[in-house]
Image (tube, rainbow, N blue to C red; front, side):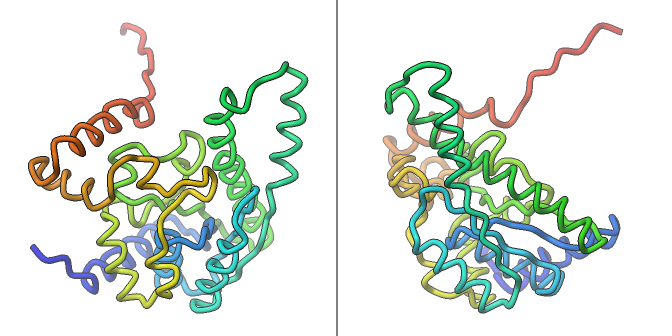
Length: 253
C-alpha cells in the first residue's frame, strides 16, 4: 500500500496531542542535529503543540559548524526557540579526568568516545527539560528522533539517543520520514542531507555497511536485498538485541 504522508502526519499529530492532553503535559525539548529526523520531528511537534511549546537544542561536541547552521534553518522556518548548549568543554574535561585512570590508546578509547557524546547530550536534554518544566510551570518531555530503520539494526547508543519520553517517528522508515518531511515542507538542505551521527566522521550508511533503503526493504521481505546485505542487517539486528532488553532476575514466588 502506498504511503500517504498527509494521512500519516495527521495521525502522528493526533497521537502527540492525545498523549499530552491525557497526561496534562506542556512542552517539548529535542536535540536538533540539522538532519532529516530531528527536522521532521521538530515540524511534527510544532504542528501538534504550537511553536511556543517546542524548544530545540543544538549540542555541539567537536562537531561540524554546518550542523548548527542547518538546525537554525529548521527553527527559523517553524519559529520555535533554538538554544545552543556546547558540550565540548564537558567532553574535554571528561577526557582529562580519564587520564587519572591510566593511559589508553585512541583505538582503545574510540568506541567509548563516540558513545560518550550522545550520552552527554541525553543528560543535557533531560536537564533542560526539567529546567523548562520549572521555569514555564508545565511539564516538558524529551522527544526521541530515531526512525524505524535505525532501531531495527540497533543504530543508537544505550543511555544516549535511546532515552526519551515520546517517539513520533520510531515506526517510520527513512523514506517515510522524508515523505512526511516533504509534506511538512522541511527545508531541502536538511531533508536530503547525507545522514551521519556528527560524531565519528562517517555517514550512517558507511558505518552500517548497508543503506537505509536496504534495511527498509529487508523489513518488508528479506529476499528484496542481496545476500551480502541481508547478512549485514541480520548481524546488526542480532548483535544489538542487548540494547532492547534488560535481563531482570525474578525471584521465585
